[in-house]
Image (cartoon, rainbow, N blue to C red; front, side, top):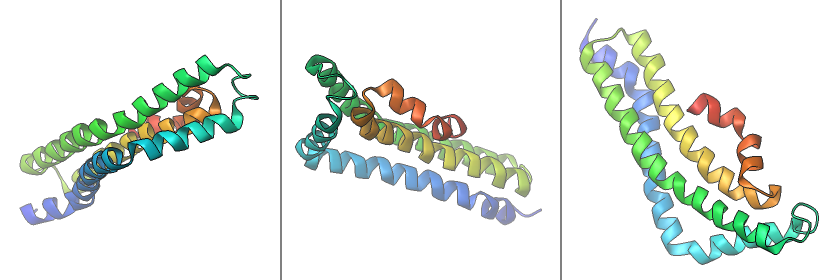
Amino acid sequence: MRDSDVLRAALPGLLFALVTLLFGYAMGVVFGLNEDLIKSRLADSADAVSATVCHGDAAAMKAVLGKSWTYMQSAHPHAGGVGSAAMGVILLIVMRGVSAMWTRLISLSLGAGAFGYSLFWLWAGFRAPALGGTDAAKESLVWLAIPSS
C-alpha cells in the first residue's frame, strides 16, 4: 500500500477536523461582534416560556440565561481543542501506516466527532432558555453528544 493511499483515506476526517477549527474561529468572531444580539435572542427565547417553564421565577431564568451563554462560549474552545487533537491524531495514524480502511474509519470518526461535539455545546446553549435549563437542553441533544464524544 502506498503512503498516498493512506493519506487519501484520511482526507475526509482531516477535512472535518479543519472545518471544526474554522467553526471555532468563526464562533469567536461572531461572539465578539454580536454578543449583545445573541444574549438578546436568548433572553427573548426565555421570555417566551418564562410563565410555563420557569413558572415566572426571574432568578431561575437569569441563571439559565447565564449558563446558556457559558455553554455557547464553551463551543468555541471545544472546537479549537478537539479539532486540533483530532487533526493531530489523524496525522499520527497516517504516519504509522495504518491500513487505508482503518485510517478512513478512524479519521472520519475523529473529525466528525470533533465537529459534532462543538456543535453540541453551541446548540445546547441556544436551546436551554426555551427548555428551562441546561440539563434539559443537554438531555434533548444526547443523540448528538454521545456519538460525537
